[in-house]
Length: 189
Image (cartoon, rainbow, N blue to C red; front, side, top):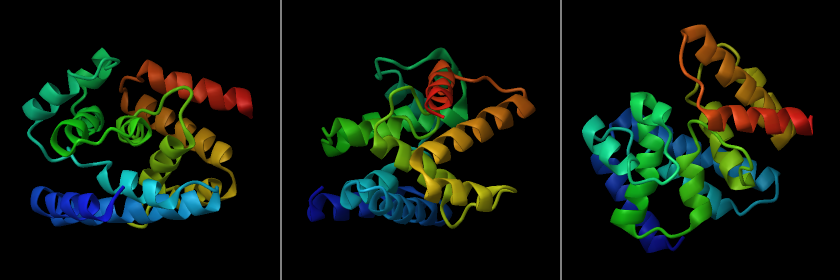
């Protein structure tokens, strides 16, 4: 990503996100960059994808839904779960408003909430970075950071296991894409 586009999007994030969400986005960007460096991936693309992962998080739910509905593979669970809408909406917003055409970055934003089978390493990095960044403070975050910094596959397996059991505990739906991702990492284990 070029510097001018990155600056433009940072300004947009500062204007459109709360201070807390903006700080979180920058923390995810830093974590994604660190993970990319650890796993030999492009650090600037990882930083960018981490920075924009929540770009649509604070849009009105109706606006998120309108953007998300344009995604070809959107599933019913995502459309009916407000907490999941911002990921596909964010990918679409990046495409429409900022002309982002890098499919791998768009998928990293798209998949950062539900994961998917056959995720790119960039998508895995952003998924994990969102879960382990410095502002996260859930019960097992230290353990999750250790897994993520040990192996990308181990990190994803543990992250998906954690996310699925968390949703089960809450009585929530599990999107098929999440199950596909989990099954893939179980197979790799």
